[in-house]
Amino acid sequence: GQQVMQIPQYQHVQEGEDFTTYCNSSTTLSNIQWYKQRPGGHPVFLIQLVKSGEVKKQKRLTFQFGEAKKNSSLHITATQTTDVGTYFCAGPLILTGGGNKLTFGTGTQLKVEL
Amino acid sequence: DAGVIQSPRHEVTEMGQEVTLRCKPISGHDYLFWYRQTMMRGLELLIYFNNNVPIDDSGMPEDRFSAKMPNASFSTLKIQPSEPRDSAVYFCASTDSFNQPQHFGDGTRLSIL
Image (tube, rainbow over all chains, first blue to last red; front, side, top):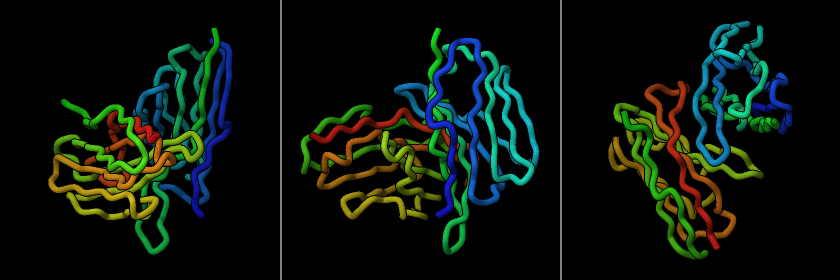
C-alpha cells in the first residue's frame, strides 16, 4: 500500500554534530509537512513545503522538498540538547476509491548527548 | 488562544471496562482527527470528522471502538469493552482545512490492566 517511510529510525549524535532525516513517499505528494514530538509530548507542526525543489530554513533547521515531490529531508546543523525528540514527516496520500488523507511517516527519533 | 483540549490526560482501568476519551478542537476548525500512538505501530489515524460528520473511519481497529462528534466543539472516542492491547497514547487533532497543518492536543495516556 501507499506509505510514507522515514530513515533512519533512530539517530544518536553528540551535541554539535549535524543530523539529517529522510522522508520517502511511494506516490507524489501535493505538500509535505514536518512535525516534532518531544519525549512525553505531542506532535507540533514545524513547517510545510509545497513547491517542487523548495528549501526552507528555520534557524539551524533546513527543510527540502524533492524535485519529484516524492521525498523530503530535514537537516539540523550543530545539534543541541533541545533538538531531542522524534521528527515526523506527513503527506496527503491518495486513498483507494478516491480522496486522500494526511499520512504520517514512521518518524526518526533523535537523541543528543553532551 | 486555547489549543486542542483533551481529557483525561491519564487513564488507568481494568480490561472489560468502558473508556471514554474527550476532545475539544480549536474553535473554527472544521476537521477533527483521532490518532493512536504506540511504539510498535507509530502514529495511526483512527477516524476523522468534517463539520461533525465522520468521513473516514477505516482506521478504527474494530467494533469495540466508536467515535462521535455531537457538535463542533466536542468529540468522544469510546472503547467498550477495553483490552490490554488498547493501551496507547490517543491524540486528538484539528485543522481548518483538509491536509493542512494539524494542531494536536496533549493526548490521553491509556493503560488497560
